[in-house]
Image (cartoon, rainbow, N blue to C red; front, side, top):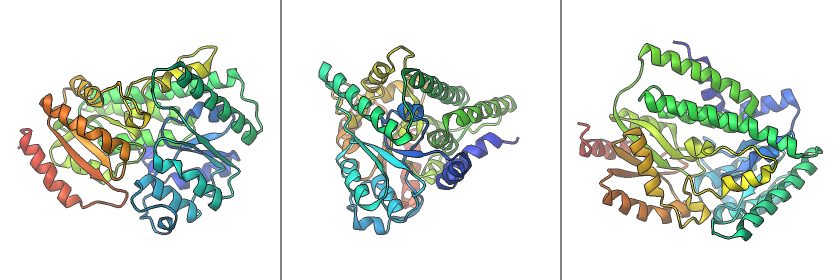
Length: 381
C-alpha cells in the first residue's frame, strides 16, 4: 500500500532545515522558532508569521560546548550548536519560555551570537492557585502580541487570533483522531511513524499540515481495512520533555516484543492535548489551556497534579501492560518528579522501566538487553 502522506511527514521530520529553507524561499515569510513548550503559537500565526518548534538536530554537539555547559540537556546544547554553525540563519527570531534554568540562559547567548532582531523571552508562571498568576500570564501574552506586531508589521486583532485558534484546534483534532485510530488498532502505526506525524505538525504551516493529516487518516483507514498491523505487548511511553527521542530507540522498543499504543511525550500527545475554547476573549482561552493541570507537567511547578496517576489512566484507557519512562539526561524537572512516579507505579503494581535518553546516541545494545529482560518480567517471552 502506498503511504504518500505518511512518507511526507517522515521527510519533513527527517529534514526540517531543508523543508523550512525551501518553504521560506517560496513564500517569503518570516519564521519564528518556539523554544520549546507552552509557547502560544496562535499569536505568532495571527501575525502572519510561521511558528515552528525548536528541535534537536541529528548532529553531535561540537562548537556549542564553548557556550553551553556539557551537562545541559540535548535540546539546549544542540540548538546553540546549530546557531553557531549558522544552520538556523533562515530563522527571523525566537520566542523562549523560561521553563527551566537551562532555557533561562539561552536568550543571552543568542543576543551575543545572532543577528536576530526578535528574541522574545517569556516568563510563564508556575501553576499556583491565585488570580495574580492568571493576570501575569495574560500580561505576558499581551507583551508577545506587541512583539509579534512589531516583527511582522501586522496588527493582531481578536478576529485574527480566533481564526488561528480554529486552524490550530483543527490540527489538534486531526492528531487526536490519528491517536484514536492507533488506540483501536494496536500496531497499525509504529512509534517512529507517530513521532514523525506529530513532528511534521510542529514544523509545517498548520493549513498545509491539516491537509496532509487528512490524507494520513485516509491511508491509515485503508491499512486498517487490509488488517495490516503489528502485534506485541501494549505499552505506554512518557517523559521526553521538549526533546525528540531517538527514532532508533523507539524502533528498539517495538522490536523487542512490545508495541507503543499511546504516549505522554512532548513530540506526541502533550503537544496537542486540550483544544482552546472559541470565545470573544481568546487570551482568556489561552490562559485556561495553559493553567490546566492536564497533562501534568513538572516544568510548571504543579504540585496538585499526580503525573503517575495521569499515566495510569492512559494505560487503563489503552489496556496497556507496562510503562516506559524516557528520561532526558540532565532534565532537572523530570529528574525531580521521577522518584515519586516510580514509587507510585510500584504501589499500583504497574511494571515500569526508565530509559535515559541523551542527545548523542546511546548504547543501544545495552538498552536492548534491558528491554529484553523487561519483556520477560511482564510475560512477553
